[in-house]
Image 1 (cartoon, rainbow, N blue to C red):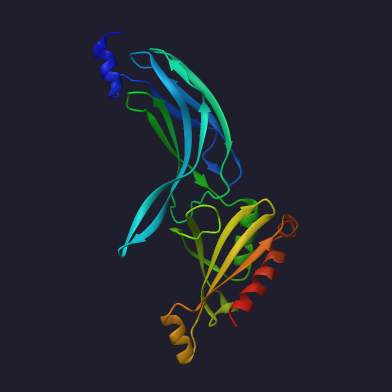
Image 2: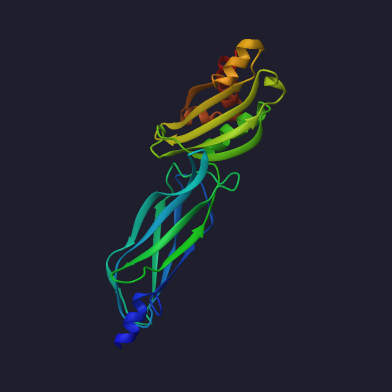
Amino acid sequence: MSFFNKMLARVGVGAAKIDTVLDQNEYYPNSEVRGIVYVQGGNVDQDVGNIYIEVMTQYIREQDDKKHYVDYTIAKYRVSEKTQVKSGQKLEIPFGFTLPSQTPLTLSNQKVWLHTGLDIEMSVDPTDQDYIVVRPHPYMDTVLEAAERLGFQFKASTVEYASRSPFGVPYVQEIEFYPGARFHGRITELELMMSLTSNGLQILVEVDRRGRGLGGFLANAFDMDERRAWLDLTPSDLNRGADYVAQQLERLIDQQSR
């Protein structure tokens, strides 16, 4: 192949291309992601170091009183060893991996995507990007249904930087709710932060209390009105259904809002 074509391939012109096709586009944390990476050889033979897929998301980080969106790689999977892609060759590479447990849910337009890339030495690496929908794991769904049965209404969801995140990633996903009649006048907001574990589901429950009188004013002024507590639910607990989980959640909120 001509020297000129090789030089063009190094800057991406006439180089190999990739396209990732997923079996579906909706998943939940800890579910299996399957698909095929299609590789189309370019005008020259190219040595590929490996083919990889990254699970990526964004979180918000505040610096100098400004909010910035930070792209973050939750996990990276190698789907092919070193190989050579010949000119015009077509490859189909099936893959499968488990979506990480800390993948955020795509609530409030939260972005989650798969980034596929080829490592090609001395060349622009071809890439492909596929957005996916991440719905709640069945355990999480039970908790969200329990909150709904207590009268809470979904408000918003944000994924924000947390330097001391207890979940093994530098962010937490806060799912916020308006209180219903049951807690009206006692709290202004409920926040849930959920994490799948080998023992079930770990939930950080945060209650924003409605301040009362001068003491309440001072508490609000210094952000002392937020109370947090852990709720650990085993698979056995969660399998008892939303009504049982609602009882556990209600008991904890009652304690926090006194």
